[in-house]
Amino acid sequence: GAGVSQSPSNKVTEKGKDVELRCDPISGHTALYWYRQSLGQGLEFLIYFQGNSAPDKSGLPSDRFSAERTGGSVSTLTIQRTQQEDSAVYLCASSPLGPGLYGYTFGSGTRLTVV
Amino acid sequence: GQQVMQIPQYQHVQEGEDFTTYCNSSTTLSNIQWYKQRPGGHPVFLIQLVKSGEVKKQKRLTFQFGEAKKNSSLHITATQTTDVGTYFCAGPLGRQGGKLIFGQGTELSVKP
Image (cartoon, rainbow over all chains, first blue to last red):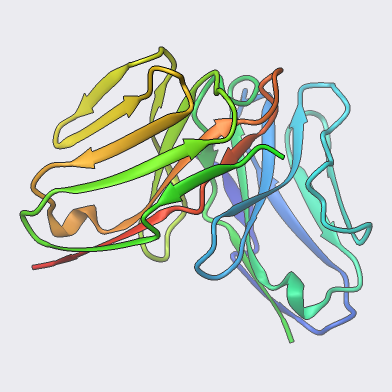
């Protein structure tokens, strides 16, 4: 597609429920990233996929968070047993090659609210 | 660990005044990127600087990369209301590049 597509745009869930957030990167972009942005805060790195390499999961805040990227394209970020502190905007980005070599193109994000 | 720090956190200016935000890294960066996030929007890539001492301009925006490649600045001349938003700098984490680590951003508001 023309840009990075994320769905849903908004998600309200009850504490303790699982949620899945989807990211469809720009076609041909080999690198895909997930970041989290809390209200008025900066961007917190979560996970990074580069081609067929093992993902860099060093930013995942707990084992309740996981992500996968199927076929080198679409990615899903899963949060199990959601907590109120998980409320944030989850941003996905993609770039043609590895990090720092090209600018990221971000999606519009998924605003997650845990009630 | 490696950090990227930005100052100021907030800047309020009168339309037509200049604006500068500063970015400092605790380690040498291979390159630095700048992004703009409009209120309610997502970050949009502005530019990347790679060379020591590099200066790039985009209309009223001037970007600089320090000689030691540990700091950078973004200067906007004669701000307009369309400049409103949060400006982030970001640098690759680690020797191999790794993921981008973002500064906390500078939020710019412009009073007409």
